[in-house]
Image (tube, rainbow, N blue to C red; front, side, top):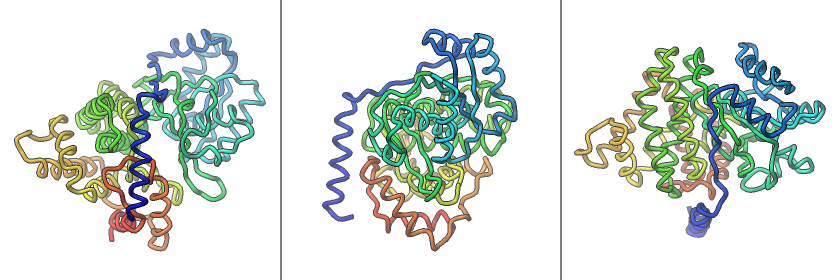
Length: 400
């Protein structure tokens, strides 16, 4: 990377880091039950809710208990269940139309990251009816309060219930981009571990690794704070202690609850400290091939950590020691490499492969440019990579 661009990226990131104490970061208030949700709606004088979810969750009847609690309180509910993995601009416009045509005044996002992204973007379009999603991509482009948003995660991984980001795929171009602004942070989050019981093992595994990626990228970045480092470390420890149990024994309520808490902490960490090239690469694959985000992160993570090299040895060592993965008497380099090995071992135990076969050689150049554009200058990564350097990672992830 040429010196001018490197200076620009680091200057941009430094300004954001300096501004962290001045920006309106907030955490959603945690709710524990359906009654808590109803009480929030009542206290805010809400009369009709748009519940944004997907067909899989709706067909399983997971939303019914909450719907019934809301209806029993004489508050209306309209369900939008067309959200797809990697939600699209068409999803958002359809949900917005349902909100407006039914006279809704609040939104509940019920599901994984896709449902929450769709709900957040829907709120943004309601707040800014004359501004397209494409014009809101990037940072601080919404700038208006969205309708009351309550997030109900059914997976322990995305952390979307805590974040200011909504990741959307353009229905026509398949370009995937993020909208980042403070109004998108949900006001409340219902953390109910019973909703995560019965998840397919693959979903439990990949969403858990998604949370691990959030925490690691937040911790190794250059815009950390004492709080984000603390949240990231706690999240990493919880994941290494509970993810495999949740995967192997899906009915273990304590492991499920711990994973929800880990995901929440990871979300708090990366909302402030951002992510890095793992996410940028994963987003490009999601946009091009509809690759599941958590799965992509899980596979890509070890490759990017190795690429960073010595620049993150100390931080990888610190995470490994805190998580109890090895004794602190070993060197930073040995600990760092062992930490990456532990990630690879966890992937293996979760039956997550080492490569992503869907990647096509002829797409790699464009994919790398997309990832580089997303990451630079926004993400405060330990080492800056050019698109050409990122191409090498795509080939490794592909298995070449």
